[in-house]
Image (cartoon, protein in one colour):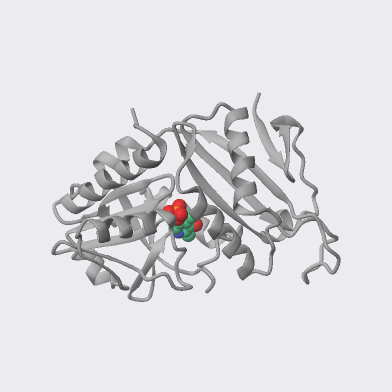
Length: 285
Ligand SMILES: *Cc1c(COP(=O)(O)O)cnc(C)c1O
């Protein structure tokens, strides 16, 4: 049996229902998070749940649970489903009300759902690297909100996948922003560059973890925007996200990046990242 959370209650998956006038369903009016689970333990749960609150605040949506309360509920979701290795997906919407663009006047129940997925680490792609496609970033200007509105991201991802690529690398004119569901970084002469955490990117938790690892391990880095030319002339390129961890990008628009194989700085960061996972969640087999 698979259990999910609907408005704070545990229900069996097949019994879970949402209202057709949930504003998440009709408008994408809500925010979400994806948290990694290793060895039955959540990785960087505080960071994700704090970001959920921040995303909510940015769209005037109050998350009616504290970080601690959410952690307890999610830990129960993990144990009820006997989840060892996988992800938790959760979302909060502005609840159910007759379809109308302005926010509903009365206080409404916020649509809170969560479910789990049993899924392994993407070892092959992490070891061998993946291809990426360049794509103009046509999204809105609140990319710092982890919003349910993902149409721009989906269009980019779909185009990449149709071209045989793993991810789209989005750019606004000459400036590289981020992937469709990941942050993008380059390495030039041993130094890591990644777009600063402005409204033009989602400030990834994985991004924050590896920047912290750079700091602690004397790997030079800068949160500085870089151009398409910088990208195409980089020694190494990698993407980062909760599900992909740190993944080398070895081809862009079918041209090899550097030597066309995962580079030393990316591999070092992967190793440090794994160590960080093991510190929090125990040995990864
Ligand atoms: C979730 C997401 C990321 C990666 O964030 P993590 O917290 O590392 O998973 C990057 N970009 C976008 C657009 C995202 O939605």
